[in-house]
Length: 254
Image 1 (cartoon, rainbow, N blue to C red):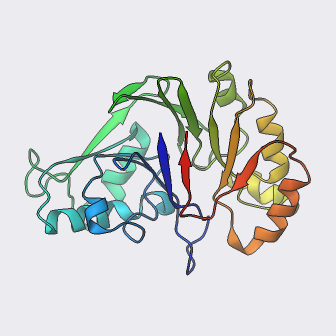
Image 2 (image 1 turned 90 degrees about the horizontal axis):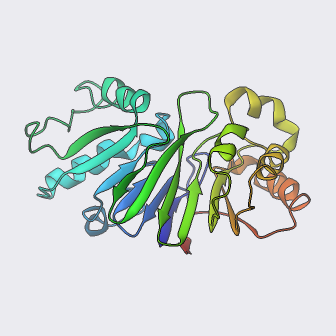
């Protein structure tokens, strides 16, 4: 498995891109910083997009990606997967012919550049040899994280989440080669993190202690860059095992 970190920032500021992870050049997890990170040729290779939730920083580039591809003459379809609530929000509030053209029916429904596909939590689907399963996480809107497995390799990507004990119970016993998990705010902002469905390093540490077995590698995403120094300090005073803060541009090989 090769995961390219297109964006890992919790805010959109110059030099940093919003959340997007590209698996083996064809499968996207969230679409916040795609078109600003990939060449048109690289964009044309994307076949599938898995969305964790419908907040703008995770879906923003779906319309721009569709626009780029249809104007470049791409004819194959991209399938966007998520739970019902997320797919419904994308259709109702984004691809609705008002905020943006509905590329699920352009040029027509059969030959559209985008297809929206609903998945059920806990029910895996097979894509390009990967078994991908959505599990509910604790956010301010309906949201899932994704367990990705292929052969003996696996990783879990949470997207945005607050403490999510039930998720870790659901995947108990699975040996994760990597966990990609958020930590948006420093410990001093614990209250706002809990209110908005996010993690601080303290809450992150408590959650990771519930995972059995502990993942081999832990990657931190969605940090609010205004608090980067404080979050780094809070993280590294708590964690003794292998952990890395993502900035964007990294390649994770499993």
